[in-house]
Image 1 (tube, protein in one colour):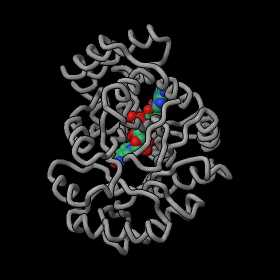
Image 2 (tube, protein in one colour):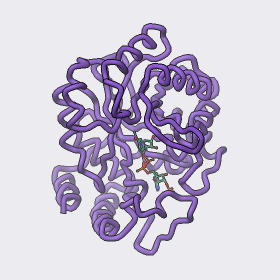
Image 3 (cartoon, helix red, strand yellow):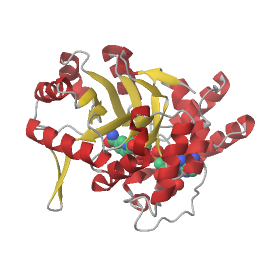
Image 4 (cartoon, protein in one colour):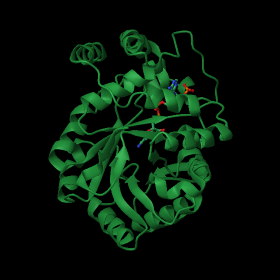
Length: 312
Ligand SMILES: NC(=O)c1ccc[n+]([C@@H]2O[C@H](COP(=O)([O-])OP(=O)(O)OC[C@H]3O[C@@H](n4cnc5c(N)ncnc54)[C@H](OP(=O)(O)O)[C@@H]3O)[C@@H](O)[C@H]2O)c1
């Protein structure tokens, strides 16, 4: 097992994090609850101690399933959840106000059946609440023992000054990153170098395209977000270039006798220093294939060929 200490602090997590978006059972096709619960426990049995969720995944269902799946194993794991995306009367908007943070946190803890969250993350900034106001509120919740650490998601260059001004308060930064999506690479590296924030990558399997399970003829049902063109990895020219990346992944996977998913994850672990890879999983089989990414390295030539094809 590979572990990483976040932000040089007391939080020690597995470098593979169980992604909780499909656990919300919304927008990923059919996802079976019992399979999720089994997958959570298998992950823990294999040394995975890091679980990411959000109050918006399935409008709370992901947190409910995680709480149920963990059962009495809560103390064995590190839970990361998020606030800031608010859904009310069918409308979705961002809210980072102190009042909403407190309300969201208590609702998340109730669903997760816990009285603290290890890593509480700003899901999206709301464009109006200054970051120091968010920090002030989170600091208070930390002193009260409701959260242990804080992180950010989906922040970019324009947020850098405010983030730097918050010192070492935020210990992680989460953004989309994979062989299919390298656009945030420089920013993730910058936040790690300048602010010591560990990178947590989401969409690490390109929403599944990098697993080698899909091809140009794949058709998703309307209950699967990947049927929509906004999920670019499965459409048009981007799909074609992703399938070229998958061919290179497949050759490397055969050499190491692991799945394509394991190679796609391993690339990030080897390429981004001290990063943690989040991958959404639906069942035990996917967990086991994904954690086979841990405990070995790609060769320099393999990294170079993946780097090259994913930049073309
Ligand atoms: N901070 C943010 O704004 C943000 C945004 C998005 C996600 N996230 C977090 O990051 C996590 C990862 O991102 P993601 O779930 O969106 O995308 P992802 O990890 O790139 O892809 C997840 C999908 O890949 C497929 N998959 C996973 N392992 C597989 C395997 N071994 N073999 C075959 N297929 C496999 C599963 O779908 P199929 O089996 O149906 O193919 C799964 O639903 C999320 O779960 C969530 O925790 C955060």
